[in-house]
Length: 248
Image (cartoon, rainbow, N blue to C red; front, top):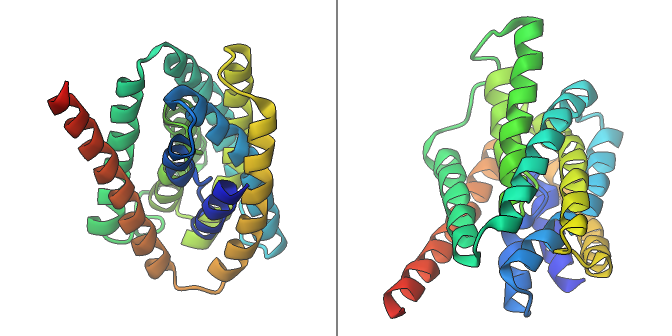
């Protein structure tokens, strides 16, 4: 529950599920790599529900966009969770680190995405939302994250949503994505439901607090802080993989 609380405090403020904190923290307290990824996704379900409700009550949500991305995310997460079950622990660690490295670099050094830079039209926006969901869902299933690190900047840049609305809408998609992935992990016997519930309860409490703080914060500051955090976790993860490889 303490691990979930920490992840919820960070995830709720940035529109992500908190998997970048959950996965390494769960491994630290004794879970193996596969079980940590699966437990992270299950806990994120409750974190994302709380975040979606919080942002929704404030009006900072585009439900149609979130649901459309979520549909793509359900499909992507199925393939991602299936791939996760077949990969080695080291392979999962490398994928987790690389996904975060790319996302964090984009947030810190790519500048703030300008809403509506690309005019896709109604049909194009639906196609883009489904595509975002597929990509985010796949990496969510395989890396144990909610997919918000892909959802949020993509919604701002491609669909033209404001940062806070993108964060709220991301939670809607993350609920659908992580629920689907958790069913796959349960079937593959990678998930112990009780652990996911405890993580989620702690995370929900944290997400409720931090999402309210985020709604009054500067959007550029939120993006930069999230990017720095993501980069730190990514570099630490990849460094540990490299160090382990050198000692083999």
